[in-house]
Image (cartoon, rainbow, N blue to C red; front, side, top):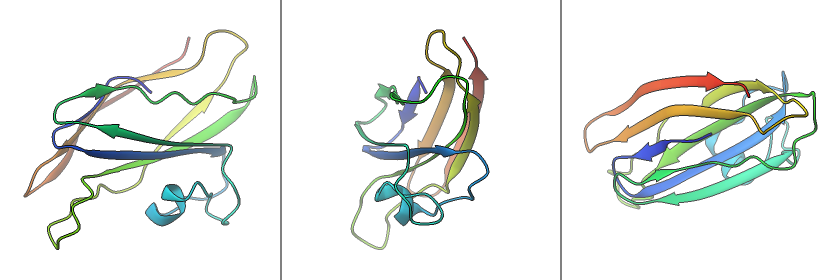
Amino acid sequence: MSDVKLESSGYIYAVAVLTDTGTPNTIQIRHGLDASDQTAVVTLTVAAGDDEVVTLNFTGLANYTTYDLFYYATNEDISRFALTTTVKKLTITTTAAAPVQTSANIVKLSWSVIVFLAMALFFN
C-alpha cells in the first residue's frame, strides 16, 4: 500500500491474512493476529509524522494467492481524546510479477472527526 498519509502523527498497524478468515479487531491487528488469534502471514507497524506520506510493504506473500489486508491508524494519545480509525480491509491477489500496490489511501485524523477520503487498488 502506498501513499498512506496521516494528518496527525501516529501509527498504522496492519496484517495480511488469507482471505475469508474473518475480520480481526484493533487489538488483534496490533499484536499481529488474525480473527482467530492465529499469527498473521505478515504484520506491519509504521510510524508516520504529521502529513508524512508512507508506504506499507507487505513482503513475503505467496504468489497467486488472495489475501485480506486489514489496517487501522491511531494517534497513540493516552488521554481520553485518543483517536483510532475503524479497521479497514483490502482484498488483493498476488501475481508472480511486481508486488501488489494500493494507492491513494488518505487517512485524516483530527480532534473532532476521522475521515477516510480516498481509496484505490492497483494490480501490477
